[in-house]
Image 1 (cartoon, one colour):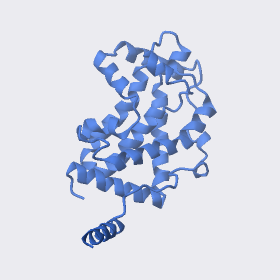
Image 2 (spheres, helix red, strand yellow; image 1 turned 135 degrees about the horizontal axis):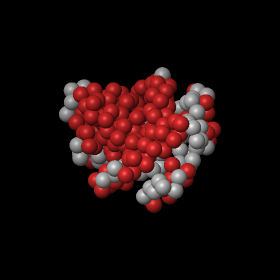
Image 3 (cartoon, rainbow, N blue to C red; image 1 turned 60 degrees about the vertical axis):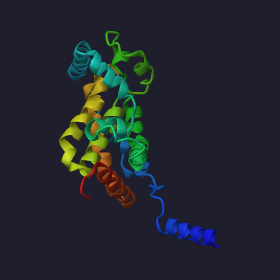
Image 4 (cartoon, rainbow, N blue to C red; image 1 turned 90 degrees about the vertical axis):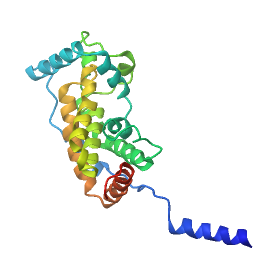
Length: 236
């Protein structure tokens, strides 16, 4: 009898406190915008702007330090933990902030509905594909074979910075700097141009704006904001 009562109480507690979960609706769909034409064209091959783009890549490669290279290698990981634990601390990890990881992974997946058509529309070669003087790390080059404009890393870094800064404005300066650095590493390693990085920022701003118009996204945003602020010890 006692076991039965305990089981019943446990069941009622679980029923009263449902597990938190994200919406199963996509944050972006193809009909939200004319994604293929969302951004202006990248610099034309051989144009003055294209040459400036390439020059910046070559200069950043020459200035690469072992420490910067190690960070760019680690930043191949596309996750909110990789972007933000430098700002929030090492405890900002999946074990303590599981919904944050799921939320930003979903943002990255759903943002492909915007990034993919733009990449396919312009079919821009990456710096190392266009110029043999650009020598990226072999593993990063092997994983960077799609068209380069706009930068997927630049897009995700900007989206993460924007949304985290809304959630934790106390850390917004550091978050924006880190989000920008995250995408900039792709330029330093020779797999993206500065204009790819800039295009990622523009696309990120538009896509975040579109997502914020959806009630399911705003509900998930608020849930993740609560998890992050509580876990970091900030007031609600």
